[in-house]
Length: 202
Image 1 (cartoon, rainbow, N blue to C red):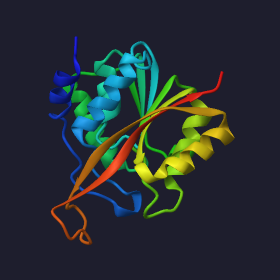
Image 2: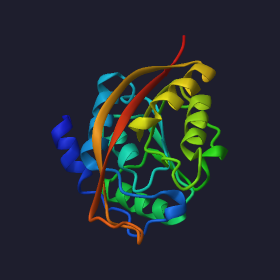
Image 3: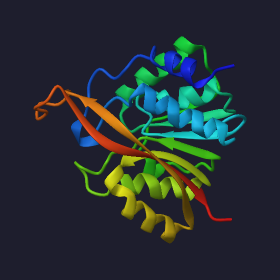
Image 4: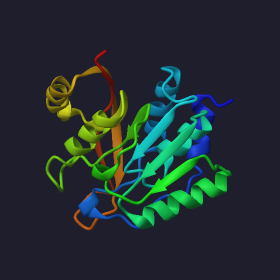
């Protein structure tokens, strides 16, 4: 059985993205933050034997982590076919088979799931891109674990109130993006994010 430390080690072996699309605000999710999000979700009973959706799945770090922690099935959803190919390779390398790869915009996802895991676009390149991810997640799941810039706090609280959700917790962390785009002037960009845990009002 995994603990948080060896889960992070296992996830660090995943093949990462090779090309990044700025329009989709693609970047590699930090292994430590991903493993923390997964471990908290697991301890809360929201992964083991659950149906999971990994929105904007990229190389599959959240969904694969969920499967390693005993998820029943995972939907990997990404609009970028190339990133899904990398995700598929990682799944094959791990010998995992209880999943679906869906090459589509999250707006077209229509499956009821127990939990959504995601690190959506921050809405820098396309305004409100993060809001769209949250709205779809709230439509099809009662529990959401999502990474957002810490200054998104007010907007997420308002959206939760509108959609009948509660902010159950915010775990604040530092997030590092390496120099991957031409406009990046520093070797790494450090900023504050929160792991948001959202639950539907019952």
